[in-house]
Image 1: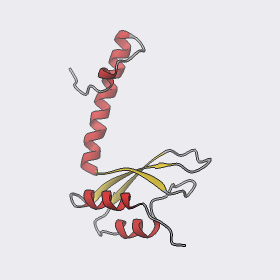
Image 2: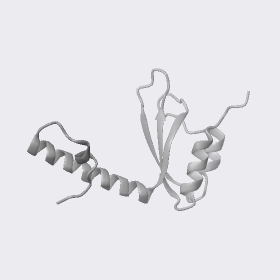
Image 3: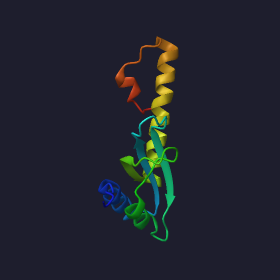
Image 4: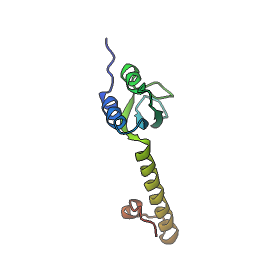
Amino acid sequence: MKRQIDTTWTTRIEAARATDPLLVLHGYCRGDGCPVRLVRVTVKDYDRDVLPLVQRHGVRCPVCGHPLTCHGVLTAAAQAVTNDREARCNVNVQRYERDHGPFIPFEVMDDDRLP
């Protein structure tokens, strides 16, 4: 029986790799009894070795070995932009909580503007 590889990983890695060899793979483990959920793998793919390895072996949970579900592949630059935006939103949530209490409106959680 031939093992099936999630082609979503291949498609998304190819798309991101066309822009930059520095990648961040985001996966989710659905393994039975595995406590791991989100997995983020930072990849340096200058020699284009990642795609053949993923096509051969898939992307697996580092704890249980179960295949990870692909949640996305970003370039390192795009990941940095995402991280910065999330940090600004987090600051706004903390400021709102400090000034108004623990019930945070969604508009505040999604606001990345800083004063």
